[in-house]
Picture 1 (cartoon, one colour):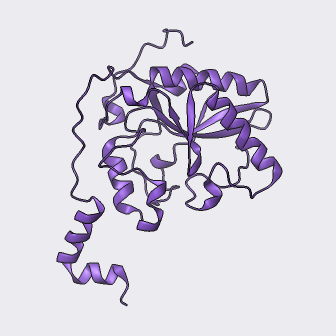
Picture 2: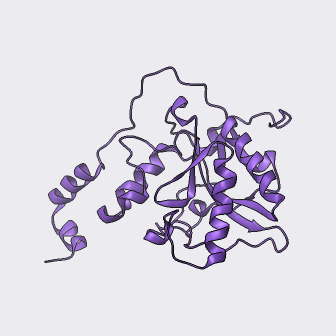
Length: 230
């Protein structure tokens, strides 16, 4: 059988059909309901001990190209408050939080879906339903060591699309699994739940109260930093 890339180049009609089937023709979901007013806040401005490694603002990600113009991380205020509390708990154990991603515009979720092979779709959100990242209530993160300042080793790399990324994966070293559990326990204690296919992805408990958003980082109105987090 000819490679898919060859077929797509030679058969424009097939390309259109595949894009339609895979969601390429989708529009942003139109939701109805009594949602809370969005209040996206920038994590780094509320706690400077939280480090950022926004891979999607670089080419160091599964797409191999940047999809964000700025290396910034936002969450709805209650979710951000919860992350800050988890970070304080982790500091008592010698760790800090390193954030890979927070709020994600819906258009980026659609790009991820359209660019991911069918056998890896469990690692990306379906744009027809939207992502909890789109609601500002999901965060991708890991731990860094307070002494060295370096990211710790986990059973898999961030955005690795293998079973090593599963939060219950039994492989890897004992230290890697222990650190994965330390992260999970801290986040779950503050109202987050881990995604079943990614140890780094955590959803905040109130995500259903927020609607899907598709605004760029530069369109987010700065929140007052002097409003004390809980």
